[in-house]
Length: 298
Image (cartoon, rainbow, N blue to C red; front, side, top):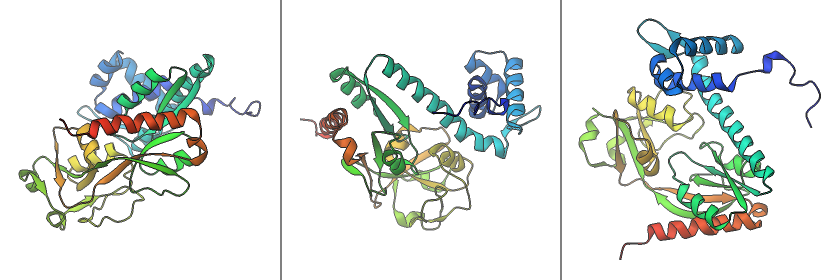
């Protein structure tokens, strides 16, 4: 239980509405388009962003008459803002599930892996279970399962599998993302040898790539950050085919790396969670859906 008075300080108050406005501006880097998306007048949006900056004590955007750009503090806050809104949404869904006396199943998903077919089939067959979905990044997929943030999660290899039970689902071919005008974009596919002299982006704490040479870019953690760096010409990026299909951009092209081993996509849970009825049923539904999806057409 929280200690009385621990959240009384005004310093702890951040308006979720302002956070949503911030993410809209961060996405468009244009106050006019962000205002249209959020159904708010542009002056009111500008005031809300200035108010949020005052609440946080930092400048989130650099503005002039011609452009809008995120400051370093703004770039850092994008990730925290997404996580904050996701946690609030997850808490709201858990509370609603509790109110109707349903069992709650918390699932984690990786960006680019479409999970709706499995979740919809499961909820049709198990109406007494409420499913709460939570996005997890590559560097938290192991911990999210072990610390009970989620009960079962879609994961991609490589992953530290200590303490986990893994159920393989399918292979996810490796692609390389590159700017539209890159010389390799003229090829239908590439080989690892084609990338030996290319700067290849990697996540902040990932091991060195065996493909290409490390790009001189620090602090990349999410797929969105990686692809933005690709579009800006900072390097190429290795991505799973599912992510390439999901993250389509007019300034980026993807080519399969034919001789690179595929990522493995599977479900991860713990031995304790796997013994629960709803977790076992969810895994059975997922494996059934993927088996039908992967079966060759007659």
